[in-house]
Length: 372
Image (cartoon, rainbow, N blue to C red; front, side, top):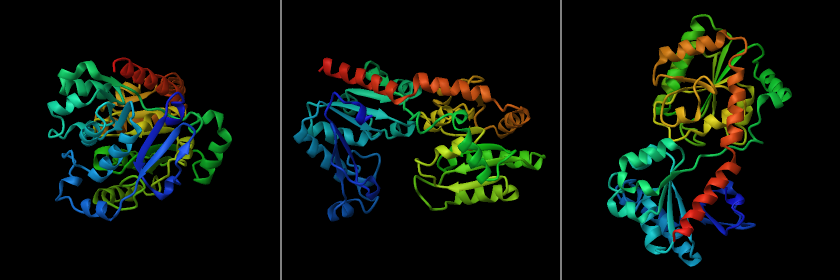
């Protein structure tokens, strides 16, 4: 998005990682990094101090203070904070003339009641959700600030996530590589956390395989956390559940984002069995951009993004029997909901491209400055 905001001078602030291949400027975009020094490491070494407690405005203070001071020299018109209400106080204190935008990406960002005080609400000039569901949830919880709440969707790269029918040669090669000729391929993409529901999906697939659907394959693309290789007790439970049908359930471990499109390309259906109220779920639009139908529980913004019986199938939340039944219907259909995938691709082209998101954000920034 920063690269698209060509009419502005943009600063991107982030923690430094070696994988970022540190650069300082690309055209109108400048990059500021935070590297932990000895003092920062000491401050952040224990959860007994407030600097690692998410209900404290001192959370990760070395980071927020460092950037608040750097931006004080820049004198920005707008400071756009993503998903960290803890940073609002320090940024506004050191940059009192800047407009503060707090962009919420998940419901859990609003759970810390110690942070969401009357003073805090007044420090923020605009609250954004990454879906209508999230913006409505902000309004429901904090009705006094309804006049400064909006939403901006997340976007997807249509070049990285091409529809499978435009890349059949690579699709066939990938399916051959993984031994998937003549198979029905389901795909799960996401963290292997209990609230994401991979256990429900694996149970449904195990039941279907044991009832005779031997050609069914489920790819579980994900790890405990982003780029994490740790195995949690919950993951061990998943492995045990899948052990009876281990030829049918394939765990890929963590897949880098630049490679994940290959798994979409060889799949027939993407399943999102989430137990949590999803603020958006980028997997939905990546799957739709890839021309794939979806099957998902009705949780949070999932029913806002996926149109039932148009782009995919929406299922009663947490109902393994309903999921198994719908998967059985899918497996019985020769075309496997191909039409849903084509509708989904069109919907992404019309609503979820980065160009659409850029236009919406430009209007938001313009409105903020006109009311300065």
